[in-house]
Image (cartoon, rainbow, N blue to C red; front, top):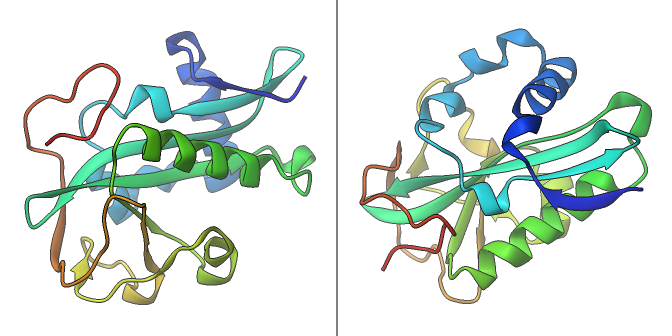
Length: 171
């Protein structure tokens, strides 16, 4: 199959099990999880399924830097038996394309620059995630409607008005 689909609420536990398999059950202790409060941007939470099994998944969460909205990408995971097939790459590209269509201007993540650099992510300085996040792993991507420019400050969980169900970027 390998079709990308929006994560169905019924898939929540299967996706959580995939994340546990790929990152370990203590993953929720990572500092980036403090930013994943409230609901994720459901239209940007994507899965790849194959014969009823979740082969790969990605989620995006609203966050903010100095009161400016940003999307926090992650986690993205591919089942160990399916790695190397391009599923993660396909999910990232599709998620970013959908985020752009919804008007988001910036995407942030904590990850490996060599991997995420191929999607246009680069290290952003002056943007701080909760400790003990390694600042060299804080990467940002400017979508066509925005740039990181001089935007600096602490990354916080989204506290703005509730996002619409379609997760369009707030104005």
